[in-house]
Length: 94
Ligand SMILES: [Mg+2]
Image (cartoon, rainbow, N blue to C red):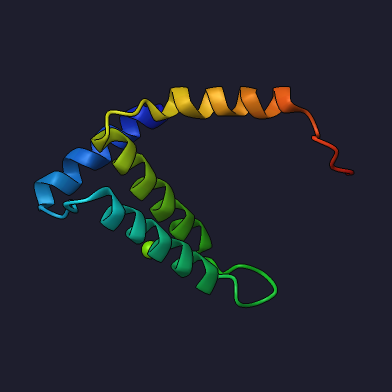
């Protein structure tokens, strides 16, 4: 299953549950709340066992927005990775 398929499956489930937000700003705020939850799982030296689940929550909320807005997120990710690689180090030292 590619990320666009995941986005569609998740979108359809959230829609069925009646949980979609009215605005992209609200949906982005919930991405931020999931980032906060992921941060809470990193309060100790080693991230907790729930850290991966919180990372998944972040991704699911992001791809849900992408699907809703008609964005091909797989294409966007691949294009951005290529752009980053072509930009080189931009002066950063390893
Ligand atoms: Mg969460």
